[in-house]
Length: 160
Image 1: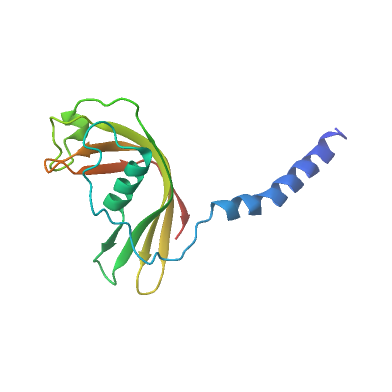
Image 2: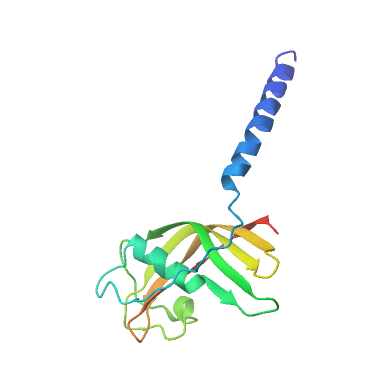
C-alpha cells in the first residue's frame, strides 16, 4: 500500500510533465500556405507504379484546393506520410467505380498513410484541423492517362 502511493505520484508527475511536449509536437501550424500544390504534369510514370514522392504530389494536387463557399476557404495538407503497395491490382467496380474517368484497363495501386487536413476561412483565418490516421486509398490513371491519388480514413479533430 505504501509503495503504490509514491508510484501514483511519480506516474502523474511524468504524465503531467510530458503531455505539453507531446501536444506541442502534434499541433500543426495555422499559417495558411502562400500557394497550394499544383501538378503541371501528371503523366509520370508512363509504366509501373508511381514513386512515393509522386504519390504525395498527386495526392496533394487532388486534395488541396480553394473552396468557393461563403467567404472562401483553403484546404491543404501537412505532415503527409504515404506507402504505396508493391504490386498493382486490377480495377474493381465495387471499390473503384466511384472515381470518374478511371481507366478500367489500367492497374490500380493501393496506398495508405497519415496526414493533417487544414480547412481555413480565407477572410478570418478560422481553421478546422483534422488528423487523419490509418487512411487508405488508391492511385490510378484516368482515360487521359493522368495519375490521380485519393485517400481517406478515420480522423481526429485537433482544433476547430
